Length: 266
Image (cartoon, rainbow, N blue to C red; front, side, top):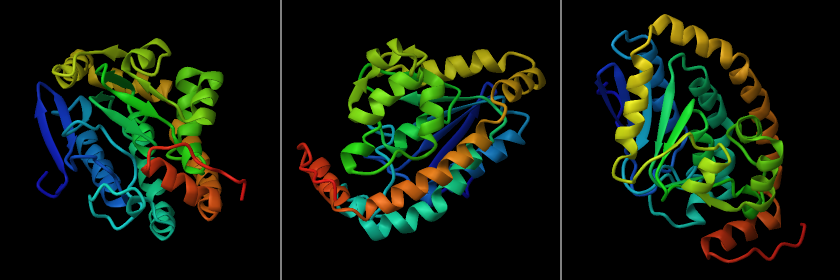
């Protein structure tokens, strides 16, 4: 596992923990998604692993994709430049589909914000254990673009079309308790115990017959990866033309400056 420069990977009690190590904001790009997918594939082939916990270091689960310089400077415009956006998204989603083709159960431990593409990453998992401090936002419309990372498939499938539409259209942010109430989160934990509780759920799954678990999971998630692949093709086209609009430039500035956008429809 030494080839994963930005992941920490451990296996204990037949549960693998894959930790994203890009604090403080844990932005992802194609390289990181590729590393996670490679790790999942290795763990799929490892009989010592029967379930996976996806976690991240620091206070933020994942603040989304880094569409700028690739540097962790946290500055809004640099992390969402038009050139960077078009470069990153061309190859990003093909790697993201690999995450959905993982064979073993995945539990996400969400201690903080899961925003935009980070929200999409959280929905790769079968289950989500979150702290009350966790925050979820599909804030794409606030940025002037279309949702991505397969969220147009995974979010309505999880919480229903109407609730998904509400989150997409408003871009509102919801916390852990509300996420639990609408079915976005499966278990609420304390901030201190969120990872341990995710690992406990994974261990409970890992106690069962591994071939049976994989078989049931394959049945229950049949066609999901293919649906996400088709959805990301459409999402990407919509995102790329919208990223070239003046509203998208304004959305990036507005979100960076923590104010409502002054949109003109151009």
